[in-house]
Image 1 (cartoon, rainbow, N blue to C red):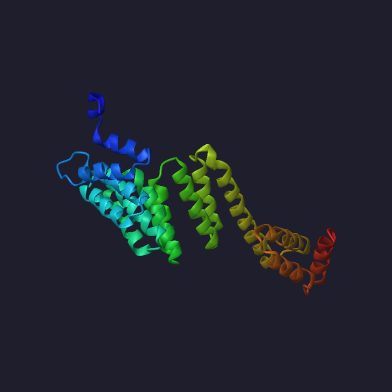
Image 2 (tube, rainbow, N blue to C red):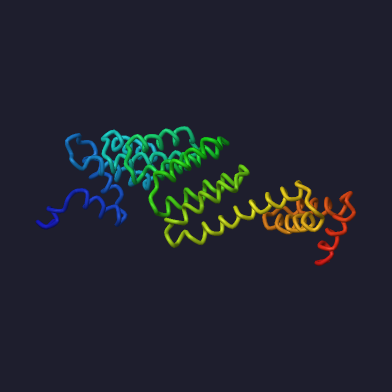
Length: 266
């Protein structure tokens, strides 16, 4: 070993060994660093050890190393360690442990990791069927995120949830606000979802017009537009029922109006 090699920091040596496939050599160096409470790079070494041990197929050892890093309270590496723990628990389907680890990320409070933790907590809430909690977490993720792809992702997920809950107007508002700051790569996706929200709003307005019972031409137009828009949202059966409602309406004038519109494409 040359003198210059002796001057290489242990962390860099461990990283180089890991990159070249020597996981045992990397783990040995990182284990020594992580075991020393006085080591200034202890938190970083412990996170690196967690990654290496995971690659070696030692999830329990990886978790123990991640907990060492988490216990240091380091703003960067403790947050990384908590994320590592949470992701591992999620892969294993251990939702409660994953939730606790994501909460630990929030406890560290490093701003860059807060939106990711909120998104993950929303995901776990959705899996548990707790839609109120999922909505709260998505709103928190959106509030914590900057004008980046994480914020756009949070907006998209929140809009999807609001659409599923029958709140297309609120979903459209979320998407419009997100589009003002979204990265260019996310704009098209958000615009498509905004269009979907507008389709849902249109269906609601058309249905409301039918229920309001306007004159025959207006009601006939509303029935046609509703019946032709519903299939765009995958609601073909509902569209058929709307046509039937109009075609068999007790008001003969309205039924004739709907028949003319229905027959145009048949």
